[in-house]
Image (cartoon, rainbow, N blue to C red; front, side):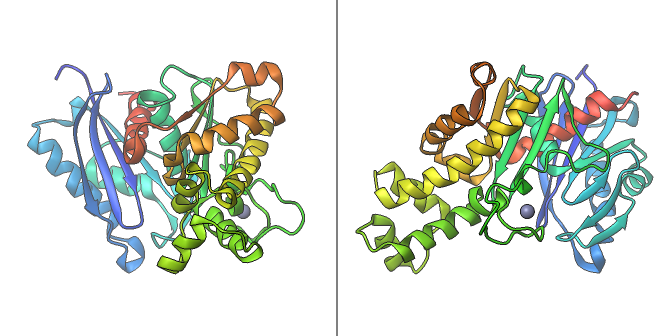
Length: 323
Ligand SMILES: [Zn+2]
């Protein structure tokens, strides 16, 4: 192992994923521990540090062979200080994450928002490989985003840049969003939003639909059901999928005119819909973008799945920690 090692950490509400990745991008090991959120998350940094120290010992790696730790956390983060202002799922409020990690491990650490971290991972070793100007969107329970310009994440003055999910796309009569606004992209293009629009469509429409058959059989539907039925040509489901793609295409069209990206990477559970999502999305993206912007940009499905965060963390350690 002649390359230097980097540690990527991806903190989630239930599990924390970690990986040991060398400078060339080769994963030496990856593992996960349970995220212990009791006592307002006060054990988390120590648990992670213990696990890292054990792993480094296992591979006989001293601190001189390791650059440091790149860690992604949910919530609002100040990059410079490594301070987590608020991470509701974890229980942290004004938590000095960087300082704690460095104290427990003796290694330098760098902290980033988890959606940004996933974007960096896709840029380094995933669907964005080779691109330096990218928009990454994660369509899960919510809608996360990361915007990379010239190889670096855009943070903005208070760390809020790239919060794509909270762009207002339904200015009148939109559904309430977790952020307190109404009609955010998250309310229509997340898995949660697509399920809700599917249920609404079943309510307002009594046409025959295999989505309705599923609803009657299971008592509920998911975003995945909507896309599966749409792929089979179910008209009601096609209309819901189109609607989700329309709003996403609208938002991405607008952002792409600002950023002029080479690639848009779509990740998260909803991205498993593949062409059922990307075909209508490409159509609307073209409509709301500009010809030269559209022609320069490719829409791709994310490739790293759950590993994007730890890969992005390792990339941050490799590129931002100078030792
Ligand atoms: Zn919102």
